[in-house]
Image (cartoon, rainbow, N blue to C red; front, side):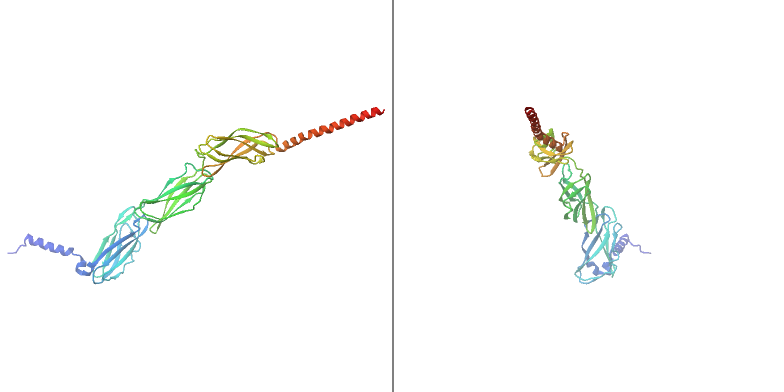
Length: 387
């Protein structure tokens, strides 16, 4: 009669077989390998942008008393491209109580996310060690925002633009440089060096800009994520115009004429703007030639809605419109100029001088004529008396 094994005996045997199968090979074949462990790892940069190249460095320590021979070390990943895949095909031994670092170059060919490439170490005497390393891919760029700028830009007038360069990433970036690019404005600063910018931090930069035509400016923030170069952009329109609240001199009550040997234009200049006009001066320009006594008329400061009378003198040989110039400054010292065409009398200064000279010559001619008449009458009387 055959002995039939009990169910308990079959289960015990199965458990023993499973335990033998699940025992690591290193524990059976290479007991020294149990002293090899992952001490630390670093990913640089901490967060890769898509298509960035970075490094993964793994530090391995042998805490045992005997050296352990390593056949090879590699990194497996379906998402990251390993650039130096054959760098550690041959490794050698790690001595007792010593550590060794293994560095892998990878390229983030995958979209944003967290990936887990597997570090794999193969022991010469059998067995292996593996470890999953989290690698973050985050393509968020630096942000450029405008902190302050003028309500309106003015042609040939310097204005200030303040920018904030923010780093919304989970890691720091380095070599941050902000530079303006424009074909319609000039900048006092060609670039502004920020340097390192930590995660979730910002830095403010200031640029002085002078627009000279319609157009815009593009601010470019150059920076590095690890060894990888990146750029962020911000575009502003710089179309110059007239400030709605600025001083605005206008002229009225104009009269012109000729007096005391010179032509003149007189009238009132009024500040129709909402800000003070400083250092207000009134004069003329070509074809007029400013002359004394009022080559230019200094008005000084004009409050909003205030006015002042003026009179300027000049010469010209081209009758018609004369450009009347009003120069002034704003509260920041920026200079402005406005031109007003003023119609004058049809005579010219040279004709006026000729006419004036002719008026001065009239009494002389009369005296000469009287002398001639008296001489003629005297001659007639003399001849009559002699007869």
